[in-house]
Length: 113
Image (cartoon, rainbow, N blue to C red; front, side):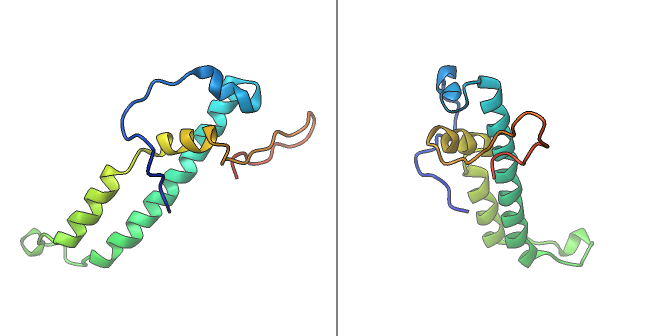
């Protein structure tokens, strides 16, 4: 997964009216952002787990567990990444999140696909 370089890792004050620009409803926009954040979170977790799986040992004995510098660096890299919610907000505000609203009477489709 490629992350944005300009995504702030800390708290940023946002204008709520910007969220309503695309959907006309702040709450609908926040629901879309939340679903996208969950998708990003799952993707990042799968990525991290696949990288850390290389270091998995079958030994349960604490005496034989040792520090692996590469494993520590991978973990630190993922800890420094912006939170999935921040990434989702930036994607939404930049118009990179595709969503659809079902017509009344239709079954809801998955948002933020």
